[in-house]
Image (cartoon, rainbow over all chains, first blue to last red; front, side):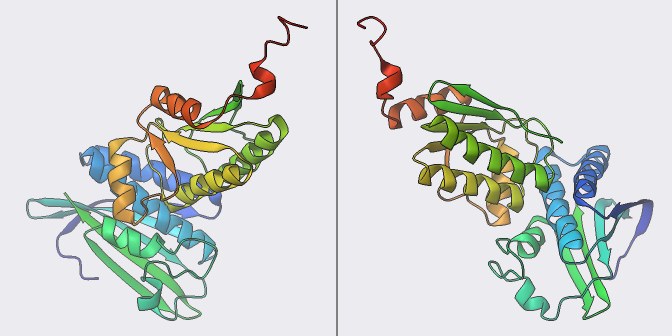
Length: 138
Length: 131
């Protein structure tokens, strides 16, 4: 995804087990509070991070989240970048379809998080891993 | 191991979720609750989520599972106290929690449970007054 603007701050959070997904939620909450997002926006961003963090763990076999504070002119935004070195997604369009699941979930994780964020991008190569980037502007 | 406490009040079981649950904790709660319903013959389950700052698809699914399992065990479930921001986010996520009965607060949740569950004959009892 092309990112125009500058990055003011970055933080990386490892995702290796279920407790790390809780830490992801907590860190994203701290960031969105510091960035002064409204309560509804904070809830949407933290929820999207929870869905994507779980995907990184369950489907990607673990990986990491990189948080970035974007500044683009007068706009500020939060960028969440989840990456793993898992099996990858063969059919991204199918993976984004509500109700499609490769596991036991409800198949709302990817499509749902896309709706909760403003910009959304998936880069994946079968066998090489997946990177999901999502931005929400204030 | 972490556990969420389950309180019993007459025919009802009460749960207040006050921590940010990791997935395994949510599954443990699901198991514990279904076991308790069956053990004590509970007729109703009230789950207070007013302290939860987010409900994602996993927690939503766990709540739906608890309600379904309780139903099969002849108990009604009501989820109370959802924060407005959580409700907005859940619907946008694509989860409107069909099959889950909700109430705004503990009081109306308890009122709902009392209305839909018949009083337990044995516990209702005047058997102590008239032995």
